[in-house]
Image (cartoon, rainbow over all chains, first blue to last red):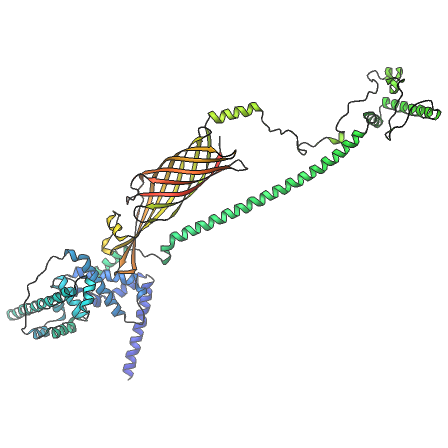
Length: 199
Length: 426
């Protein structure tokens, strides 16, 4: 019981610190902004990496998101989860980035097949980082739909609305993204096994 | 494995994935990005309104103060003049009374009184003589030997026709004693007594000393007809801009103008005016079509541009004046204004997250001195000469742009009202 109380007390302190930090950020204190950036870098970068092809792209999305956070910190309601708000901002930033660069995305790989083989087993053996890397290999439009639907839990109508495409296209893109990802994961696992045998 | 299960596994694995490590270069990039952006305080969007309302408030205060000051000074001057006039009137009334009294006296009496007041030997002799005469008259009265009568209350003597005018004159001996003295001849009546000398400048003169002769007037008229008259004065304008894109606001111009009067009806007006013109473009399509400098599309779609321009205007106008009265003229003018852009500030607002309420603002400033095609001016107004000989001129004017103005190349026309307070130099 005491341990639970201590934990709650610790959480309370952390929240207080966070609110102080956010308050300083709101006032434009550069050091506090840097600290917030560092503290939530790993979490927000994890989101951004899933929506980008490269690390550079992810940093661009990340920084766009943090600019919005620092300028619009007043919109955050202190009672709610800051991480949740941060996540939403990062996703919106990724969507904006996708919209801005949509016309530059020419690669459209429509080759896909069914991979009914032991994907479950493969997933068990792959690390989070490897799966994220596999997601990054998806074409941007598929990657965007896959992330929004599978990870963020958006509905097809919402995705269609956000990306200015039809619901049918989101469904189609999702299906293709899944199959492509499975293919990538299987091939990745194969490569890994080869390396282990050789090693 | 079905899709649902696959999705769940993926979500479970990477849903809360946190990227390992920290990249300081990412933070440096953020610093750089932040440095290019500026945040505007809440009142910045009302800055123009605040500026205009403050200006109007200050102008109103200045006008009220000047009116109060002027009227107060005028009242004091009136009161002073009134007091002076009253004093003068009282003095005039006293003098008039004295003159009337004096008129009722004969000049002889006056001379006698004057002589009585003098103490020279001749006067003493005269006095003695007068006493003798008075005694003689008295005796004659008593003896009824004379026709002397007292006709009025004034102490004067009269004589019958048989008596010579020399009845009051001195004897021969007297003449010898005072060879330059003639008989006591009544002097000419003076309208004024020695006490009735007016103080210089206190009693209004019937004829003004400043009244010009006909010749001078003719010469002056000739001068103004043939020479070039010069007027100089401050000008204040309020105008509204009408732009081919965007909406203009009311701008205030101020400057100094000179009016070179070529003839009673024609004059050339020139000078310099300075203003800050403000207009706003909120049409997204128009913003896309325009070639605005330093727009950054990566920040989001541009939704608003607020453009401030600091302009020096040099007009040259030919004005025709038609007299309505001696002091009022109807004016019509046409001319050309050269525009020099001293500075321009472009404030851009980008939409953030597709949320119209969330915006990022950036600013671009250019201080490149640029000469623009200019404008054609047409004006119509009135001028009125004030009591202090200064002239107030008010006119409605329209300026038609001859080409694209500013860095953003916008076409604009202006409609406004102008007031000038002219000082006559020549």
